[in-house]
Image (cartoon, rainbow, N blue to C red; front, top):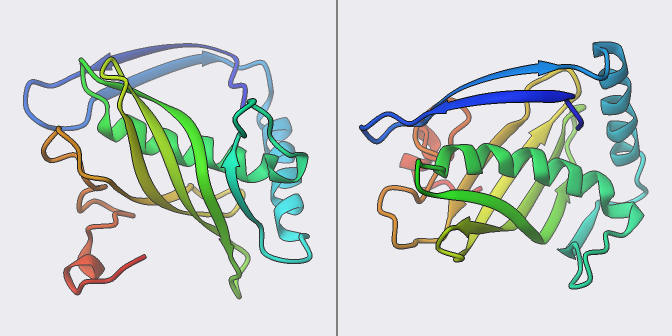
Length: 177
């Protein structure tokens, strides 16, 4: 979503912990307009006749099928959480592609997707594969669990043991999401 003009300050502690981020935006949209856009996106997802699935979003030409735009928008939001957690003073990430996506049908009002996303690591130019499970309902925070493929940066292979984490209590029992 376009949040307006923003200025972010990112402080990287010397110890291995997430950066401290301060963001100030001059919004170009009011809160009601943002909520309406969220609800339109949510309704598009909820009113599909069958679960949404897709591969290679965008395709090799940079195109996204209109029917897959909602899952791309959620992938951008969810992967930004992963990129924030993995970024350091010397490493940054961009979402390169959704390799695959599958919607899970739920009995409650939330929408849930499994993604395999490819993150482009800067400056190493490596492509990092991450499995991400995303759960969302307008008006609620986006919940993201993730596990990324092992790479040359020790300690960066999961979402940790925090709230909404893939390595929380269920992971101790060998749970696979």
